[in-house]
Image 1: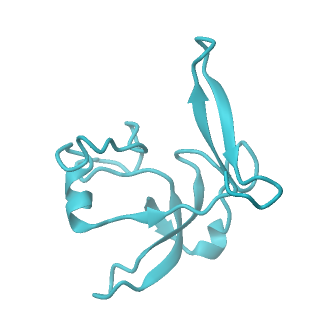
Image 2 (image 1 turned 180 degrees about the vertical axis):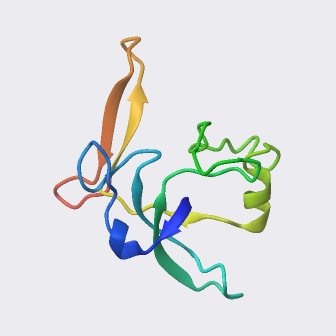
Image 3 (image 1 turned 135 degrees about the vertical axis):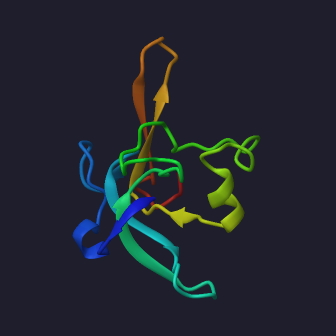
Length: 120
């Protein structure tokens, strides 16, 4: 998450898929540990979904930094410093999308909470 702003200005994920549906690089509200306190106090803040690497020269995400791999998160240039500092956040959303390549075409699959309140 980068580009933190007032959470009221980005109270829901804002993507082309509708309110509450988050996609990488979309604006939304995130829950993170407050950077200005020592304990584990959390805050809601607005921002853009994605990791802005420390070596980026502009605030534009040029590489896919959404899915870190457990095998390389501690060693990859983009992730190792934030991982070591414990920088994590929660991305509240109603749904998320993953690509399905079964037909050799990129088709978005939507994952959401079931209507009967059972989870996923």
